Amino acid sequence: MRLVIAMMKHETNTFSPIKTDWQRFVEWGAYLGPAARHAYEDTAMPIGAYLKLAREVGAEVVTPVAAEAMPSGPVAAEAYALMSQAILDAVRQGCDAALLDLHGAMVAETAPDGEGTLLERMRAVAPDLPIAVTCDLHANLTDRMAENCTALIGYKTYPHVDMHDVGEQVGRILLRAMAGEIRPAMGWSRRPLLAQTLRMGSDDEPMRSLIAEARTEERRGLLAATVFGGFPLADMADAGMSAICIADGDRQEAQAAAERLMAAAWERREDFLYRPEPLAQAVARAKAMTEGPVLLLDHADNVGSGGTEDVMTVLREVLRQGLEDVAVAAIWDPAAVRQMAAAGVGATVTLALGGKTDMPSIGLEGAPLTLTGRVRTLSDGEWIVRGPMYTGVKVSMGPTAVLDTGAMQIVVVSRHHEPWDQGVFTSVGIDPETKRYLLLKSRIHYRAGFAPLARATILCDGEGVTTSDNDRLRFEHVRRPVFPLDRPNT
Image 1 (cartoon, rainbow, N blue to C red):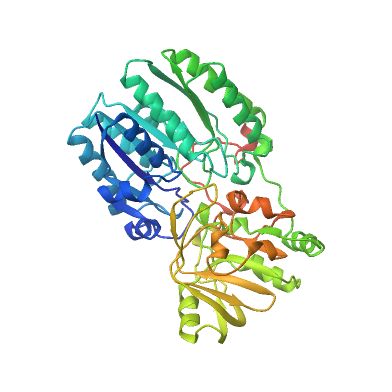
Image 2 (cartoon, rainbow, N blue to C red):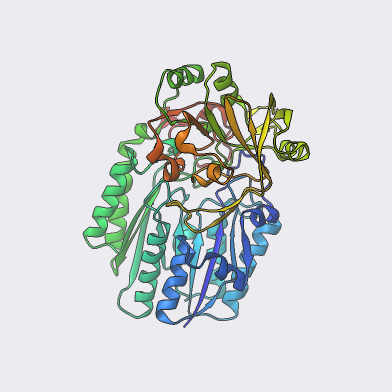
């Protein structure tokens, strides 16, 4: 048996000004050929699960590409062509099946439905090829995606700690189908619902109940059942919530289950909207808390959803209100890192920190914050994830420095990285368990590494292109009407 196993992942925020070229994939970790297998074998990623299954069945493995980039703007044409062409070329050379680790919310300059376009092209090359696909919980499911594969599944957790599990689940479905044991039949459904990411935590309502219903459908006999929260910051036609189910030989059964899941989601559509709190009020609540760590979430500048990671609005308010013993992860500012490196560890420096990026899509100009502090640490920014999400994956934050202002220890990085693992602090000598406050540029993924530490968690409504304020966003391509943008018509 010859298997093509590949990863091509990007969550595209079409409002983000950050360029997504091939170099951005390289910075996160992009591998071509055999190097892709070596990089992800024995990791907790879906591609790691696929490689495990290949070993079990003694298959020959071809890994044309394994590439992922931190969320950012639309994927450049040359990057999309390089990745998709590598997969297509591997299929053309002949294989018995393909197992793909995709995201589901990739918008490329030349392909608004990045995954659907890839799968459609694969089908044109090999019409009968068995294809398994794993997608993120935030996938925007399209007809082209579902119609051009054999079995498609998504994560059931956010933060995504079940990536390996669902990869193995869909991989086994495909292998059983190839052995003639089952006949996967898929049904899928969508609703015009732009749920907000802050309301998609799988431990929170309403997502918790929907995931529980999907698991119930599987216990009743479905091979797989997935609810996708969708990614509302990808302004493309099919953005929004969806469900896909796989039955053994009975598409009507799968379709009925998908419709039940989406009917339940639509009934609770109001619960998928985030209710804001004034920033000053939220920080004041944090200041009144005497035991830490208290987590302060700068969610509107979450680089894990395409934020620039250099908006200083929340950090500025924390300083204004005089919070102390704060560790911050992270501020993206390569120039500041170079300045601190030139000064050396122990030196006192004054920096115009952050605020280097304008965000035309929301009418926000970069606004640096002048700070004076001591250079506490200099690092290459490389470490291995040991927590439950992305376990075993090597992180490269690029040249990294810690600025110690007395009240704050600020991790400053040269490459964007969302803080979902404690390694963002421990790799530069900060013990997050001992801090009173942890200011994180994250939404929900922080829970993977930091929830066990938290005495309290406070959402800080700052500014940035991952805002939950739809009034700041100009949607041009999503299908209309859609809730909540067209609330009177729904």
